[in-house]
Length: 133
Ligand code: FES
Image (cartoon, rainbow, N blue to C red; front, side, top):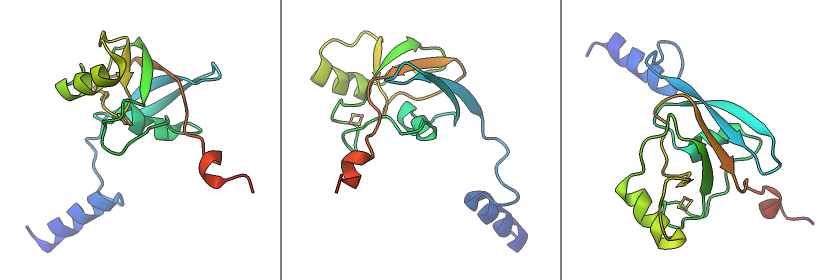
């Protein structure tokens, strides 16, 4: 690789000039706990939890490794969501019994196209870590 090739690759990695042009983004609609809807654009292969970073607050998650089952969302339209992986099903069934596709784990469910719509049960509560003093 030439020095110019290296420079271009580094710029692409840090997101300045010569960046990736092959990133695909899709609209994802979240119905928030207060009943309002918000549509965000998220990159293909993002999880719903990752996509929720564009909401006023992200989906409440309970673990860093996808094992707690605490990030359940209700699926209103599963277009654009990859089928549940074996690991998602295993974690889901450990905490929530039977998996039928009507609910998914936000930190597992990946976006593969447009049209997904999910109801968020709980957003991350920033006040819980800020304290009230
Ligand atoms: S945050 Fe723990 S399983 Fe999703």
